[in-house]
Length: 244
Image (cartoon, rainbow, N blue to C red; front, top):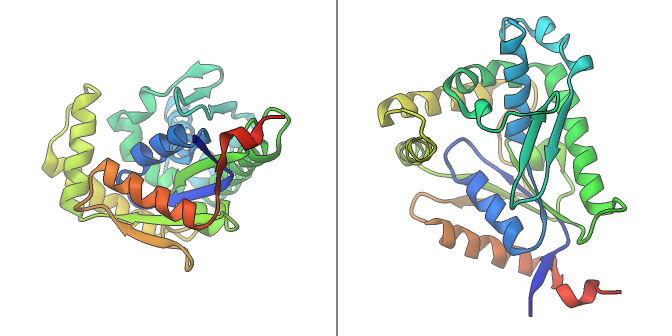
């Protein structure tokens, strides 16, 4: 019998651990909504670059927030992110945004603004009038610690840095973006240092999160582990139980 997710699954971890791939596929498998919070930080970064703002000037970056028009779609079959009505899903994955996203993400005002938006998206997916299931998979770097500390399941994904760099490079190549493993490894390590040391919502594992090393696991292996953890916590229900 088909099963669907009830509640919030929070998936955190550094770049290249497979968060986006497994979170989206998990949401698809369990009929849940899906939220990529990293895309939101990338969108603010793109807005700053387009406005000619110095991404290291926290006050200037924060000044963009009141007029920021940002919409995210939570359908895992076709997740979207729109900036002022424009689909920027491809542009926010480019090298310019990738280089600049860490300092923008470290701005306390940016984190406060986006955390509030993310919580509204989660609440709408769980409790809103259009919520068909009441389940959402959320991935990022501070979901279990800040955004959704009451999530029914918190998972912290890890993997060896060289493996993460290889995965990122393969993803870039598949998307038509040029990169090398060495350059990507340097970027992975740079982002790890930046994200782990920032004052606002640093990258860290929640005390009650399950740590899952994906170095030796393929996507199906990670999904199997996640599904087992969700089932153990009673967060899946038969789809038929949702019928009126």
